[in-house]
Amino acid sequence: MARAIRRRRSKVRTTLARISDSTVHRLSKYYRTLALFNDQGIKTISSDLLASHNGVTAAQVRKDLSCFGAFGRRGLGYTVVDLKKNIGTIMGLGKTWRVALIGVGNIGRALLEYDQFHLHGFPIKIAFDSDPTKIGKEFHGIPVRDVANLEAEMKREKVEIAVVAVPMSTAQNVVDRLVAGGIKAILNFAPINLTVPPGVFIRHENMAIEIEALAFALTNPDLVKGD
Amino acid sequence: MARAIRRRRSKVRTTLARISDSTVHRLSKYYRTLALFNDQGIKTISSDLLASHNGVTAAQVRKDLSCFGAFGRRGLGYTVVDLKKNIGTIMGLGKTWRVALIGVGNIGRALLEYDQFHLHGFPIKIAFDSDPTKIGKEFHGIPVRDVANLEAEMKREKVEIAVVAVPMSTAQNVVDRLVAGGIKAILNFAPINLTVPPGVFIRHENMAIEIEALAFALTNPDLVKGD
Image (cartoon, rainbow over all chains, first blue to last red; front, top):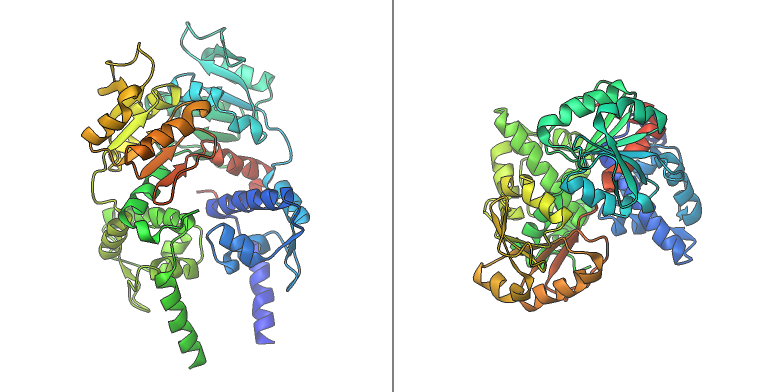
């Protein structure tokens, strides 16, 4: 009885709590696991199985999902198709987002070639650069506009997410202009921390994160899962 | 008593268990948190604080660390400098690894410019391409060799980790040649699953993963932590 009260109280607390980046990353992973299971025609999944597929505890899975209210039923697990749909709705993955790229250098051109943005609902619609030899051209079908007109063009194209791939030295200035132009979500590839005001979301992509997992594997070959 | 036995039994099991990718990623994050605290002169850290900095439960932190034996003391927390050193040793982060890049296209050139590999102990020493206009040149001080001589050059340079940034269509062939040349660790940027034999470690870098967190933030602005 005391336990039931404690559980109810903790549920109220998590409903009000804000969600950490790590929880959001795990929800992305759960979503992919559920999509995989759904494609294979599997109807239900336990928190244990969802946990072991993602290298976390079942308690962590239940805690992550409890933030959004109760899915699934004790002893029966989660219905794959429903949980996938619910997480997709929560994550905003059911729609196509309008994305702009700022900086058509090496990383920028690599991103224009990269189909993972397009495939997951984040197609790059428009690109910006300051280089006159690039402005007016198309790269992989995406037109490059003059970054001088950034704010006006972003509004005209109704851009929702900006991907920043400019040099470190100009990244903060570009971000300030994006914010002034009303952009609320920025994905930054420059290896530098950038400041945004409250209400604007920024995420930093670190292209070197996975190499540490390889150092671990080489140091501990017997401890790494062969999957 | 039954609980104590259960706990002891579970400890034996985790000591023998293999470590998931997610645990390794979390260890990387804990390492960075500890480095930050150490730089600020903080001597001890509780599992609660290490957990809240990384968006996981304290139970998850204790479970992750327990895989490697017992650090810290109940009620006293962990000694920052010792735990950092232990995780660094476990992760193989104390040394400089010899890294080669295969593919000097857009992603490859972006990686040669990117200082995060160098800063974390993974400097790119040598690069390979099949394009005769690139072979023999240097990009950001890194010489580009002919990929035709891949296996021999990798051995001569004692490369430990290969970063693959070639087009999808040739990625499996390059990986097969790396494996034949004795490489045990591969970081792949091509958006395709590649096959390696047992004993070879491969990790896939997905440059689009953070954008889903932005979609979540835009969909649930009130739920996202403002940090």
